[in-house]
Amino acid sequence: MAGASLLFALSGCSTVTTNQYEATARTTLTWKVGYSTNPGRNQERIETFGSTSLLNRNGEKPEGAVIGPDERELWWSALPPRPTLDEIEQRLQPAEKASQPEILRDVNYQITYRSNGQSVALPTNYDVYREVVKAYPSQTPLELTLGVNDSSVEKAEPKFEN
Image (cartoon, rainbow, N blue to C red; front, side, top):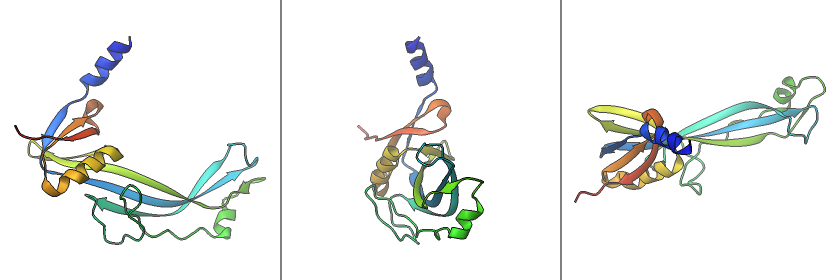
């Protein structure tokens, strides 16, 4: 049964070789506050407040970058305005207590490549993003392994001509 599942999962994947590509990582900073009637019991309702985003392209410092590069070589925008006590209290429900505001860091990775004369943009992960960033300056051909139904890029490897 497991073998059949693996075969099914692999059958939906394909590979593409391209030398026209770019990697993007959208970094987002968002304030969050937890609301709970019983703090410490992991039954928190999370509310988000102000948010800022920045688009990293091919590992280069984007215009407007304020923070970075971080340990993953990503750049971040300035922090959004911290929610005020009034804003936090407006979202309180009866008998709830609010936690201190915390900043959430989120990253969405995407690869755009040319294949058969068309531009294709697919979500990916950090490892693929880094491989594309490293290959980008020289435009080394990459072999991209696509995910199930070709809906994501799961792997990127340099493809050297023999």
